Every structure is written in C-alpha cells, then in structure tokens.
Length: 108
Image (cartoon, rainbow, N blue to C red; front, side, top):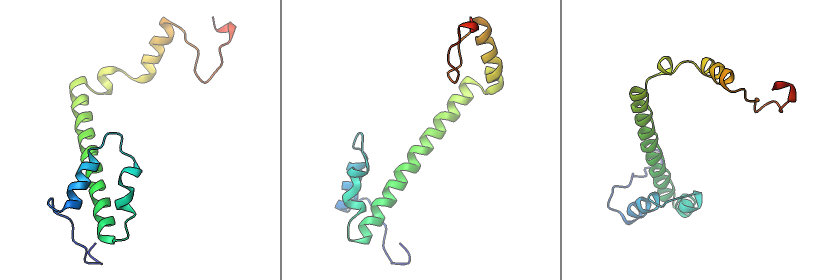
C-alpha cells in the first residue's frame, strides 16, 4: 500500500460499509468477497484483503481469549491427568478396539 501510495479506507466510504456487510454474511466463502478481491482497481483489492485480514485477526484473538478462559476455568493437563493415564483407565474399564486396528475375536 505504501509503495503504491494507496490509502486505507476509513469506516465511511460505501465500499468499506459494503465490506462490513459482507463480513457479517453467515457462511461466507471466497465467492462472497470475490468481486472485491479480484477488482481491477488495486485500491479496492488491497483494502478488501486488509479488511479480511483484520476480521481474521479479530476472530483468532477471540478464540485465543476463549481458550485461555477455558484453560483457567477447567485447569490444565495436570488437573485432568495425562492422556495415556486416561486411556489406560478407559481400557481397563471397558476394552475397546483401536480405531487403527480391526477388531479381533481374540481381543475379548
């Protein structure tokens, strides 16, 4: 953007408002923003991609915040026990065949 002296959109331009509407589209795909990403005007392409990057960063921040809250609320690995210990308890209580190995009658 700097090399080509393209300015970042503020919140007022119609294109920016349209991009915000598209970002709120449930089940959005590449096709949702394809017209803006593939536009002939480099200013539109860059700003659409920048808007998508900002939305992605926001969503990742929300996910990390939620994972941190869950980790603090439910405890870490030590509180839950290790996976191998949990698997050992489950196998001792009810033997289940491995999903990687077919069931063998001798396992009973």
